[in-house]
Each structure stands twice: as C-alpha cells, then as structure tokens.
Image (cartoon, rainbow, N blue to C red; front, side):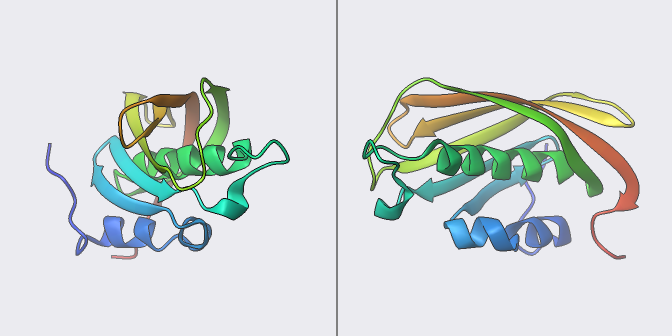
Length: 140
C-alpha cells in the first residue's frame, strides 16, 4: 500500500484538523486504512492525580481513528469508540497512536487503535466504528 505524502490532498486535509493541531497532535503517516499520529504530553494535560488526563489520551486515539477512517478520501464520521486504559505515563512523554482498519464496508468501517509511548509501552487500546458518507473528503 502506498503511503500518502504531505502534498496529497487527503493527507493535507486531515493534517489541518484544528482540534488536533491545538492538542499538538501530528499526523506522521497515512495510507488507506491506516494512520499514525503522535503527541507529547504537556504538563497541563494532567488530572488531579498528576497523571495524564484520559481525555488527552482519548483525543490522540480519536485523531488516529479519524485519520484512518477518512484515509480513503471518502467522508467518514464516528459512530462509536471505546477505550481501555492499560497503564499510566508521565507528562513530557511522547505518545504514538496507530489506527488500523479491520474491515471496510460500503457504509461502515471497523478499527483497532493502540496508544504507546515512543519506547513501545502500551498505554491504551480502542475499538471504533465509522459511518461512511457518500461525499468526497476533498473537493476535486
């Protein structure tokens, strides 16, 4: 499968997501049915326990899911997403989320997402479903 480049209209559209940019999430790799994104956990992303907030980790996983779900160039929106937090980490750690398409249907798609530290420690796993719309993601 061919990896989409930064000059590809689909890669460009996904990489310009305002919320992901605000969170510091970077699109690293995109190909049909797959994405990899990364984010460094900032000190303000902690909860009252002093560990990264689940919402920050979920947002990273969701960005990977959105990228993979829309990677075919067809608009896709989330129907559901579940997350399992497996380990805590610390602010300053760089996290990498990968989303992989398990099944692509005409109207839906099923995805597995993992969130790991750059060192490979598993932080969270997710399962998610998209609804595929009939419109193209980018104008032609």
